Image 1 (tube, rainbow, N blue to C red):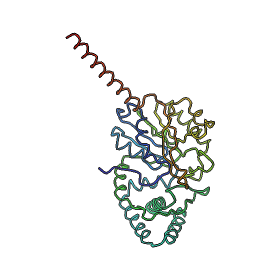
Image 2: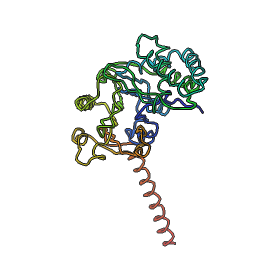
Image 3: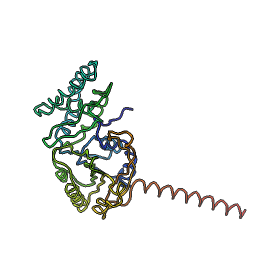
Image 4: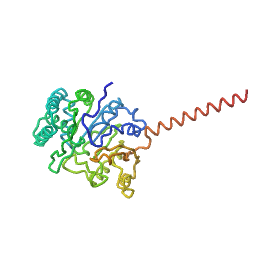
Length: 328
């Protein structure tokens, strides 16, 4: 069965962490009635597509991102999939027909400049967003202080630029999603009743050379991380649940307890994730990430308790049979 999945590459995407994230959801999330699911940082959408296909009790879904080009992509995939597919198909044919790397590089740079003019209609803007995403270095999305996309050309021999099957499936799933474009705190008014927020913000860099979090012209710095924590406090006080991902600074440097101190009143888990954005393959590998949440009982903990209960029942049954046999 074909499933919805991210239609773009995204640094820090959660596809490889889905099982770990699912295990750390609230234990009874699948039983919530009329659940609302909110992602204030849309990113690549791996968790969104998973949640909407895994949990039919989600009746309201809201995504948001301050990157208007990204939210335009989501709206275009949702509302105009066939027009987008036709446009992507044309640019894919043109690009793949170019015989040399230099010709492809020139084609890429011309369209990067055109994209940065910022006067495009939603179909063309989304077409170029996806084209650049599929043909730039490592699928990065990074802009400079002027808000201009500045990721260099990537040397891919046969990139898939038009994935029509994924776009159509994603469009169906996104029909259930309200798409916002603004500050992450603007999502609060969308919460009601049984609401779960999942935060996947720009990660705090682990070193001076690992900062790939400039998805907009305004950097997400430590002050922004503190503001996000205060927003989590507001969500917690309102009685809603949240789960938040970020880099594990302490895992890289034992003395760097930024997040451990910042989120000390909440539960902090650590999960393993591969990261491949380093230009040197030898420096790519697994790192720990933190996962913060404001609830005690998770699906993983509930599963463990069920297993323990089953084991206890089995031992009880074995013991009961032994006693009966001894009496006989």
